[in-house]
Length: 527
Ligand code: AHR
Image 1 (cartoon, rainbow, N blue to C red):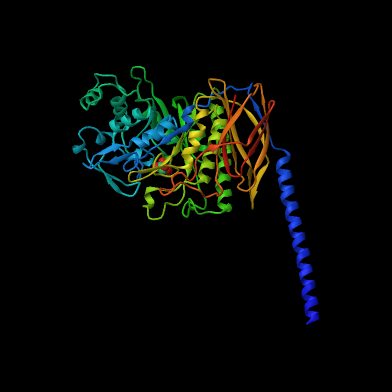
Image 2 (cartoon, rainbow, N blue to C red):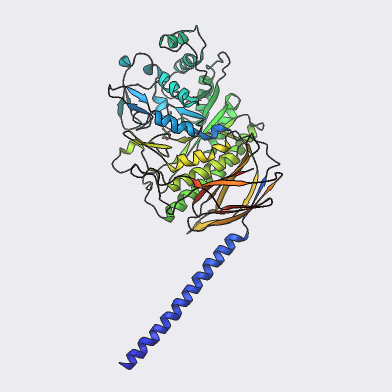
């Protein structure tokens, strides 16, 4: 017994010592990690070096005839069976100063015949949407309805013409129908359909993903087709076409090279598409059920957007050193598994704090490339992929991504201020990335705005910031964060995550100390 007791006591003492050692080692590790994270965290904003304007069109959107994006999304069915634009959607989108909307696709664009979508609705032919679930639509939303929407939103339309299965004449006549001031055959038809005035649409996509669903073309072949189609879009009145060519998918640098070489002089915008996901295309990760491994996987991809844009820009610079041609990121965002119970072809997914951080990092990247990236369209506005808004019957909710767009409105058409940011790295397993992403701008009234994102889901980051060439007298801010990585807004709890006042920025003279909470997006206003 005694021996046993003695033995038991010895074991207890050993266990206690071991526990103390482990606790000490953990404390040491936490302290040294925190200390090393604190060591080099600096931000310098060069307020005296602003040159490029951050085009508001970087904050653009995309609405395709896909799933519940258009029908049962932006438009709601009335009791008489007709479709009406939802006022709550319009108000929510106006609040984020939506600068443009790309329509009607996506893959749908090269399938769409615009003449089926004008005139008496009862006589419009139906269409089977073979790309997206084989659903039949009745063409109730066509040219007039879409352009009515953009007028209600106070935004610029970006129309994508059908190059894949349409003709040069069809695309040319659509352009004429929309823009010819009056007297031409198409303008007369427009007037007969109730709209005598032209809409003056300038952003014009000449096909979509012509390397894929838009016709499976080689870049050499598409470059020739692009020139043929784009050549039949004449200027009308004060409107000149801003011709946007299908750009590369992801890292297809050869596509950019050939397009710039063979058609660069006729291209106004080259449309890069890039989606981010966890897992594989065949087996994508879940939108709201994930751990830190998937957090790090997706956010690392967001940080890699910078290199992708830089490389495409370098190629464009060789052919267009004046940077006349816009790099348009015409489709981008996160792509997860569809929500349980939804039609997988409808691409209906939830949207968590993680998606908000992907948006924030990507938008910071576009801002940093303001000299070349002049337009971007997140996919897609309502109920599809990384949406701003989700609807269910009469209900509507704003996603965490929507809130990032609202916070970033301060950058629209502001002057980008170059910055140096060194805030250490966030590492999880074999994935490592800069821990903080940021961008800064000065608006027309002289205020400076800084957006900062802490990608580390566990550690806060304190950054010592200085602003060169600007005497800062006050700082205020807002933050979007949550105690969990997976937080999202649901129809039961539509306000689970939204921006709140931020108290982590302290000003001493011109020196600014900013403590970013873990997994957060912060916007600061400096006066
Ligand atoms: O946004 C969904 C689809 O993704 C678009 O229709 C297509 O252009 C892209 O491949």
